[in-house]
Length: 329
Image 1 (cartoon, rainbow, N blue to C red):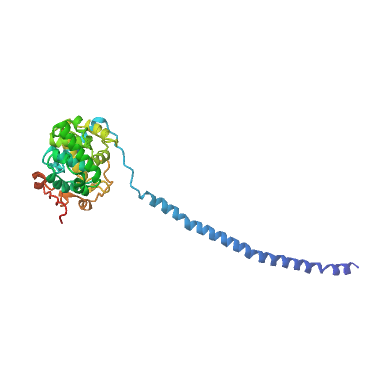
Image 2 (tube, one colour; image 1 turned 120 degrees about the horizontal axis):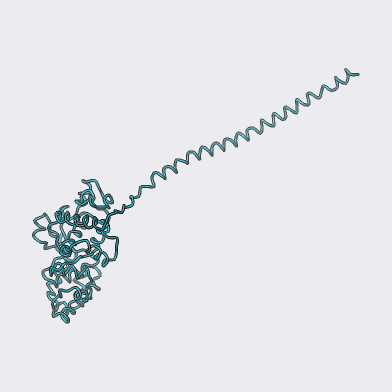
């Protein structure tokens, strides 16, 4: 009986083996799914690793922008010394600096300066010979036909507004000043179209009375040099005027404006050709390579015509070339 029971119970083992085989087969079928999932996960990790350097590259290429200008920390006395040294250096470079508007008398200068708004001195110099040939005196221009004046002034831009200003200015000279240009600031600024900038150009260059001319070049350079951070022309004039003796104001204006037109340009300064580079906190904003910088020079230093058709002899002696008349070339 015992032997018979033992013999009957043995088939249970094959059943267990079959179950084990089924479990193994099931696990083998499941394994590829896990392997596929793991492969996808591995691929994702690899992609992440490959993408990671892009962030590093972005960080490396971002500082391509120009470095911010460093502010100079200096006392007022140190600022005065640096500003005056810059002016002395510029005086050696531009001993022939002069107003770049052609004129023969105060009337021509005040008219030319009014016309120079929103255009170049060159364009004014090419236009005024025709204007003064037809209207040589304030009395002539005061009685002029506006349409005829507009046609002459058309090349300077904003010719209608400028015609109104120069005719109104001429009438004021005739009616209030006996046909003569006044030599006082308070009188000049009362004339139509004449502000402080124009008044100081006239005072300094027609009457020999000191004044600072804050045009776009002057304002741009004195801020680059950190003489002031003011943007209002009147405040710039006051701040810079406090750094220099009054007797130097007129020539200081010429030196700065000459430098702004020839070397320290608005968009691409020729830093590598600049004589005051060691004194300039903005050095490096422009081209620093000497050879490349020299190619950026304008007017007499670059061999190009200047602004005036009839420049001073000192300018011609320095290698300056007169500008061509309107329509030439």
